[in-house]
Image 1 (cartoon, helix red, strand yellow):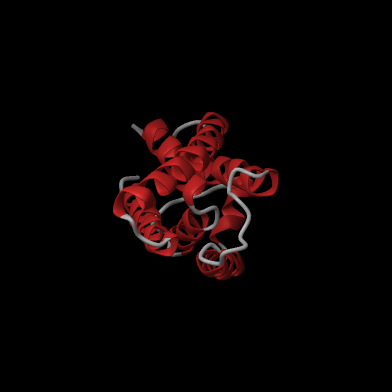
Image 2 (tube, one colour):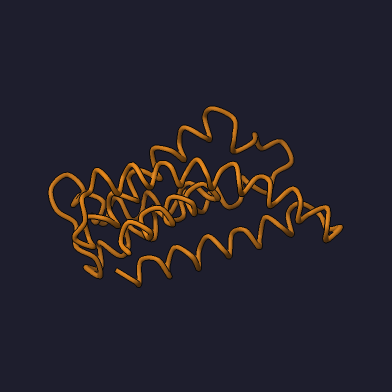
Amino acid sequence: MIYFLALLIGVLTGLRSFTPMAATAWYAHLRWIKLQGLLASVGSMASAVIFTVLAIVELVWDKLPKTPSRTAPPGLIARIILGGLTGACVGMSGGAAAVTSGVLGAIGGIGGAFGGYQARTRLGKVLHSPDYVVAVLEDLVTICGSLWVLSRI
């Protein structure tokens, strides 16, 4: 089950790169999940604040018309790295191998980036709505999904 959660947090990272990481940092800071070794620094107040600020900036930035695609190299690389990091945190806190969980999180980040792009594009066409409406829905899925995953550990 924990490996599935690591993959799922990676998928959510593919939708919004910093939101799952911010949620993970706060869960670790509040000691709702336990991280050890190098990953313990994710639970520091500084990490929680930095990732939260980056998540908020990303939530706003994503709605701007000139924002590059999440599947372009810079965004995709960030989603792979952060998906791996959040996956490793989920795995470690759930008693699973951090490396395996990190790989699953990174794979989930790739899947979430491409799948999220396709879903957002198609849903916008089906609903005949502006892109930002679907983007806000995607924000809600990412926030609620991240909290749900972390609450299952």
